[in-house]
Amino acid sequence: YTEQRGPPADTNPDPALPAPAALLKKTPEPSSAKEPPAAAPSGDSHENAGPEEGVGGVLVPPRDPDEDSSSVQYGEMGKPVVLPANLSADVKKLVDEGWQKNAFNQYVSDLISVHRKLPDPRDQWCKEPGRYLEKLPATSVIICFHNEAWSVLLRTVHSVLDRSPPHLLKEIILVDDFSDMAHTKRQLEDYMAMYPKVKIVRASKREGLIRARLLGAKHATAPVLTYLDSHCECTTGWLEPLLDRITRDRTTVVCPVIDSIEDDTFEYKGKGSYQVGGFNWNLQFNWHAVPERERKKHKNSAEPVWSPTMAGGLFSIDRAFFEKLGTYDSGFDIWGGENLELSFKTWMCGGTLEIVPCSHVGHIFRKRSPYKWRSGVNVLKRNSVRLSEVWLDEYAKYYYQRIGNDLGDYGNVSSRKELRKKLGCKPFKWYLDNIYPELFIPGEAVASGEVRNLGLGGKTCLDSPARKADLHKPAGLYPCHNQGGNQYWMLSKSGEIRRDETCLDYAGQEVILYPCHGSKGNQFWQYNSDTHLIQHGSSKKCLAISSNKQKLLMEECDISNQQQQWKFQNYDPS
Ligand code: UD2
Ligand code: MN
Image (cartoon, rainbow, N blue to C red; front, top):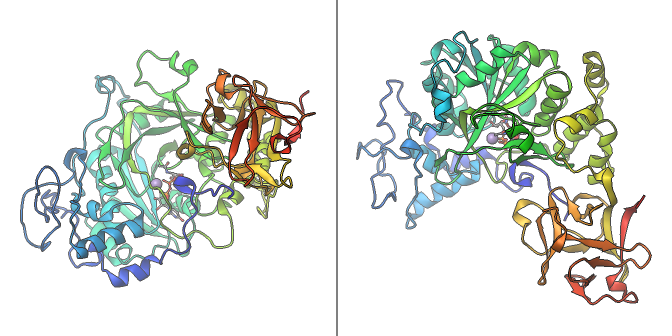
């Protein structure tokens, strides 16, 4: 019951998922039809108007796709496409298979024009004359994909072609990371032949997104590199503000605001507000409100803001600066960690990382990873250990505690350490103190590690995933496993029992997980290392386990009751 780490909902890919190829044989997706369902290059925007319009914005299933049945344009202006509940069995099967292959609603995507229009989410400030430098460099847009849905991939490419000033777009490099879906082969080549700016580069084996990006960079010829995921949609004016920042300072690395394209309806949700990137000691990326210290620096909320980290997929960087930083660690496999590596070294080695609110790009956030990872290796952990070894200095131990101090085989990182030395980068402590002072440092905790109950054989530990989805839910118990993860807790100086931003909270009902609020009250616990009691501040009750070891209880304190006695793994009140 240790936390599974992976994208984007912390789930590792399900090994039981059938291979995409197997699915393709059963049901040819639109992409393997002779006529791509996507737009003809003529720009005719009626190409996807197969299905008929239903009542009240609800759709009925498509009829013969060759039949020009209506002029309805699904998903235009980013509107949601909602399928009716009473789908025929055939269509339902297609919908289900689309979900299974992609972890988003491919069927809905196939109904939407690859040239669909989107709302303009920009603040007025962004559109003022003279806002951007007149002379901007061109960029190469690099899009890596592994088995991306045809209509989604094409919409990504077209949104770049349609909404980038031609003189600023040198080329689009599509890096196929060894896909096996049929449409990723000849069909893609044939289609893109009509767009001379689009180049296709193919990996000869599965590289993972990090090495695929490096392969793309090798083929890029523009002075600025722009990376996008293969399920994005760029909005009007997305590119100029990014290039503007880089032109003013070549060491600035910039990210657009990432808007959400809903995985089920493909609704484009332009955000009025935006957040900056952070991370936790599991080395997982997370979002945060723009801190006060940063907000104070700006007159207008559309001005670029500093961000401690980037989400990873969508950013522009000066090519020479990227190379100076040693690009990515090519020892990183498949997915994960590269976003923090690039974030840390940008800051520590003389650059600046910004979110540029005038630039908006949509991205489909998926709840699970649809593609195969490597079997038998925890690639994310391996990437994160490499990252820690090279960049985290004495703080690496906090990540290691979270993985039960089992580093595994992470390969050789000596050349990366060499690189850091050569560049004369600042210590990680400098980064934490100056760029991410909000982060809770476990070293400042009074106690940390597992919280073991001494009753009923002493084998039961406090255990909860403590993810967003677990907030407001009762905290759990589980046999102690000594691997950190969901059993890693910290007792803060101010009496919180916490992991990252989640705190143990008691308001008279059940002991639940709640976002830490820092004002004691229901989150204030007192641990006595002699009696082993954990007493709650406001209720004065003590934390206990039920006799079936399933539930946390709050009881009148009784030092002789072993089910109320707890031991923090590392306790150091000094
Ligand atoms: C986020 C980033 C993603 C990457 C990742 C951490 C955003 C919006 N997305 O996860 O870009 O930084 O965090 O590593 O910031 N791909 C390959 N080969 C593979 C696996 C993936 O080419 O072996 C492609 C994939 O088709 C996609 C891109 O890499 O275009 C990112 O993968 P993802 O969409 O699964 O990652 P995501 O958005 O969950
Ligand atoms: Mn993605």
